[in-house]
Amino acid sequence: MSGILIVDQIQNSSNTLLINSGALAANTVGTTQLGSITNINSGFGNAMTLQANGTTAITVDTNQRTIVAGATNGGSYDSTSSGIYFQKQTSSAEVNVPFIRSEGDSTTTHLALGPSSTSGQLRFYQNGSQRWYINGSGNLTAYGSGLGITFNNASALTNSTLNDYETGTWTPTDTSGAGLTITNNFAYYTKIGNMVFASCDIQYPSTSNGSTAQFSMPFTSTNYANAFVGFSSYTASAIYFENVTSSSNMTISNSSYANMSNATVSGKRFIITLVYKAQF
Image (cartoon, rainbow, N blue to C red; front, side, top):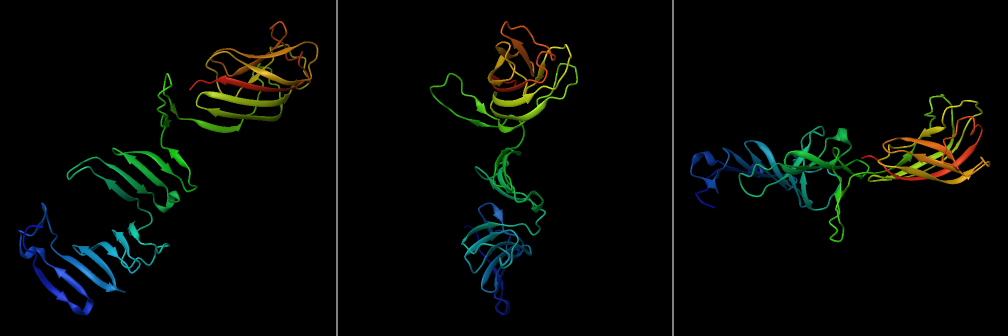
C-alpha cells in the first residue's frame, strides 16, 4: 500500500473507526483513491461493518459470515455457516457476482441471483447475455433457443449439440379432411434431439367416408417414416403405416401399399410404434 493513512477520528462510544481520506489526496490503494469517509464499525453485537461514503459495503458478522453489499448484522440469513454472502437491500433486485480477468476488464460475465419474483433463479450470464439459469425447482434450463450440451467425442464423425429432450403426449387427429373424431386411448412420445420415439392406441369411428385414412404425428418428419404395428383389428390383410418426407401425417396402407380409405378402417383399432427423424 502506498501513501499515508490518516486516522481522522476514533469514536469509542460507538466502537467506530472513521478514516478520513479527504485529508490527504495522496492516500491511495493501488490506483484507486479512498472515498471521502470510510467507516469501520464494530458496534452491531460485535459484528464489523465497512462503510464507504456512509453506505454499508461489507459486513463480517458473529457467525464469521462475510456479507457483501447491504446487511448490517446478517440476522436475516437462514444459514449460520461461515462464508461469503452477497445481498441487495430489497428482494426485488437481482444480486450479481461478476468475474473479471484484470482491472479495467469490460467483460460482463457473472452469476446472478434473480429477484424474489423469479423464485430464486440462479442465472448465468456470458458477455452481457443470459445463457442458462437454474429455476426455483432446481432444473438447469437453457435461456433461448439453440443452446445445449456439446459432447466432444473424438471418435464421432460429427459432434453435435444436444439441445432438445422432451417427453409428452399428443392427440392423433384425423387429417383426411373428413373431420372424423378418432378415439385416442393413449399417445406418448419421447424426443431426443431430432429423433422421435412414439406410440399410440387409436380407434376409428364408424364412417363411410372415402377419403384416404390418415392422422397426425407429434412432429413433422425430415424423411420417410413408418410405424410398427403392435395390434390391428383389421384382419383382411397386412397393414402398413407410412409417412412421406416433410409431413406430419401418417397414412394407412394395405399389403400392396395402396392407400386405404376411412370407410375401410371404419371402427378399427390400431396400436402402433413410430421411430423417425423429425425436422429441427
